[in-house]
Length: 564
Ligand SMILES: Cc1cc2nc3c(=O)[nH]c(=O)nc-3n(C[C@H](O)[C@H](O)[C@H](O)COP(=O)(O)OP(=O)(O)OC[C@H]3O[C@@H](n4cnc5c(N)ncnc54)[C@H](O)[C@@H]3O)c2cc1C
Ligand code: SF4
Image (cartoon, rainbow, N blue to C red):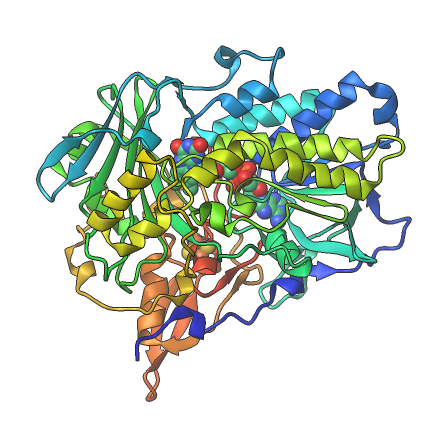
């Protein structure tokens, strides 16, 4: 019988991240509205709240000394943000209406041209751009840089941003979310208090907005605690990308399909690459692959290295130099995997945390921004006299369901699932779905959990190119290029079974782009010991999709992205 990652669940339950407040009232930190996550969703929520405070200072007075706070686990806003990123500006235009113009935002420029290539090992064939992938009127950005700019905008409107702060527990009291508890700092590997130990704190708020992005730690806990999970399980893809300084400008946005992925349905390898110009002298290149793949030897990190050896791609990078690297998962379940509700008492959920991503378009930034803005408006309504908090927060669901986010996601709801049937059949079905604007097929296709896919093994790893330190890199040099400087004597934040069948240990070892896992000693019973180096982790979240569990490490750990 084949091994399935879900047969070896982590020693962890999402409800471990839910707790009652413990700090005495006089030690608790009180804020008005609390946002968890300084990504596009969280910062859009904070900015909208700041705008509303500016418009109505008398009401803002009621929010106390810290009216809006944003917690961010990265070293600074932007440190943990990674995207393509070609941005549909619609969300940002609505957020900054009458306040900021597009040319004031930190974009590298509008998309001037684009091409979609189908690759074989040696050749590239240009194919018509599928309508879902057309990028006319969109702009190229680094989401890390965009995040820093949005954070400055938020601060200029009176928002307090607390970086290096992980929200570790969702505080629930009397069936209502009352805030979060932040993680301790300064613990040793065994959990002991070191000299610089600082305990976490309870932060209480009238409304908590979770905008944690992919694999949200508290979002998962909230979905479980309040019974909000949707009909289909969430599924993810892993994206690995590099930023290059190049000798010649790239004129176009390029997407590729086909090689180095295999088309056969039995492999379930769905994905492709993106190559975007970042101004005149930089290019970003990334590979995205669905985590429902089955081959234990598949490594998205190494597929990206292989992609760069293609003659067409190599030409773009020739004479250039890699300046940054990173990895992150993308929720791909789409419409069928959305939660039943996006609010609970005292709580609102937005962005990638709840899966607001358009997979065929590879876009989520404008949905994150729009959902953050709508969440902020619902939170603000709790301040209206005569309206109950419950009714005010319920307006968030209503406005999300009537927004462009909802109608667009509904149209493409079955596309990702179609590719589980192989590249060619999936492509044909996706074409029919596009032509009928989602009316065909009429129902909803369900998703299957990534960790439920039985593993198979081919000799895939034998054809990954050997690192040369110039074009092709190994994982450890990639971790270095992510800016990760995590203290390696802190407790492990990865929850995983460490004695497992060899196939599973190899899957995790190959899958992790940051070389956190290593296959150790074999036992007589066919299992092996899994060894961990958690400080390498760039918090991409793939392990949670494929059978383990990522929890937030000490605040300030992880990558320090600036250009991703
Ligand atoms: C490889 C790749 C390519 C993509 N390409 C595109 C593209 O070209 N265009 C596009 O529109 N979209 C693209 N996307 C999707 C897009 O990046 C996301 O939809 C978008 O970033 C989601 O924004 P968010 O604010 O919801 O989450 P995020 O951007 O993930 O931000 C969440 C923030 O919350 C912080 N956080 C999380 N948990 C906690 C916690 N417990 N405590 C404190 N802080 C916490 C994180 O550190 C992070 O800073 C791509 C994604 C990937 C991975
Ligand atoms: S250990 Fe960290 S870097 Fe590796 S797969 Fe898991 S989350 Fe990603």
